[in-house]
Image (cartoon, rainbow over all chains, first blue to last red; front, side):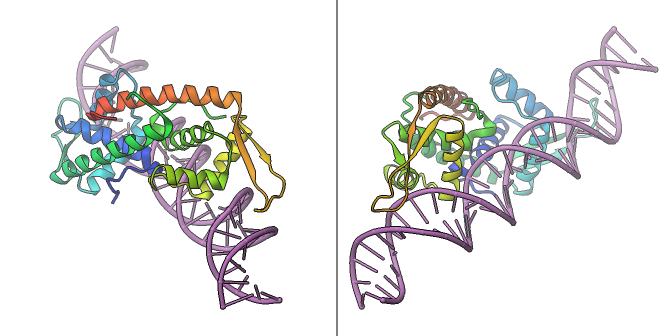
Length: 115
Length: 115
DNA sequence: CTTAATATGTAGAGGCTCGAAATATAGAGA
DNA sequence: TCTCTATATTTCGAGCCTCTACATATTAAG
């Protein structure tokens, strides 16, 4: 079970988690759509490879932060829709606080003014 | 040769590089002292393990971003003092710009207000 | 009927950090 | 003198995490 702490050692994972949990906070989505939305909303800046995304979703589900439901085999074949759990919302909030702390320290240490 | 681009995939490395290059911009230092200074200046928030720090310094030197000079075997045994090169200064500046871009996108995507 | 888009999954490879152990010198204290 | 602690650097193996690539299945379009 990963911690909500954001440290220098887990920045990449913490970033991916934050992006995913934050996107799911706006409503349930399945993996493929999540990747598309992320790319669109960031104008292509953030791009999840599905070889990265699916394992992360599985892990988040195993940790009880998100919950996946298989939709009936609709017009587009099988899809698994993910939603935030209560624990996931708590986790996301803790992580946001931790990100703020990290960014504050980092900006000061490196001399970044703007954000 | 690593790039100055800050992406989701290399955040940890980019963070370590930025901290080191930024610290060396304030004056030359050798590895051990660099770690101590970093910890002190951030009130213990950033702590470089020497198993991490020295390999990074070697890589930065190999890439020509910093330059190390062995001091005479002074009162404290052998020490290698590192200084930024011209290329290192350029690299640091490019990376700062890249960090700003990343933080901007990230803050917006995750809904972080402050920096 | 073939191609492209939708949709999910896994295995292998590689990059990078961490923990631990090794090496060496010098000063302090017993 | 002997030992312990702090200074100072180095390297190896383990482990985590992402990426590339491959595999699978369905549906709409041409």
